Length: 192
Image (cartoon, rainbow, N blue to C red):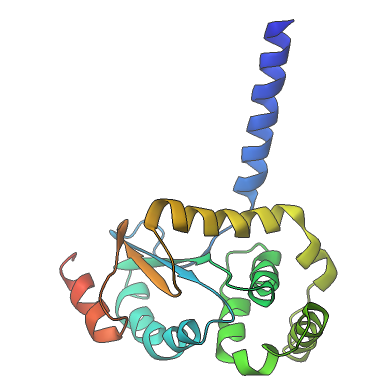
């Protein structure tokens, strides 16, 4: 009887891990690059939006598109609007950053509302206007995606002491300098 219970527990744990593995990370660059960057971000964070506007295009051009580095976007929602937007950005589960990038580029268009319902409505209207074909209610109510997003936040705090966004991790070391392209480039050049 104990063997059966143990086998059942192992099967269930394996099943849960398999489900978690089905959600693809949003990643840009060469998956096997020597330099691995993790960006913990909140979709309602204006500093994160500035990173995507001012730093990410240069990073992409010089390091990601050339195969020298990869960047993995992890969720660190600071409020319920960011939490729901994070779930939406993962909903297509294709690892593509299109929704994430659009949400950062047009943050002022959808980050509005005095209630969760208003914020969700603005987010939903924005996604429709941009032509993203997703089932909004299914996305924000999907328990598997919700756990995925929350686990990113837990991992950030536990393993990297993330306490603000954006927080950049380079090859498992927290980037401690002011986040601008000049400082980031200096850190990356030392790793090439």
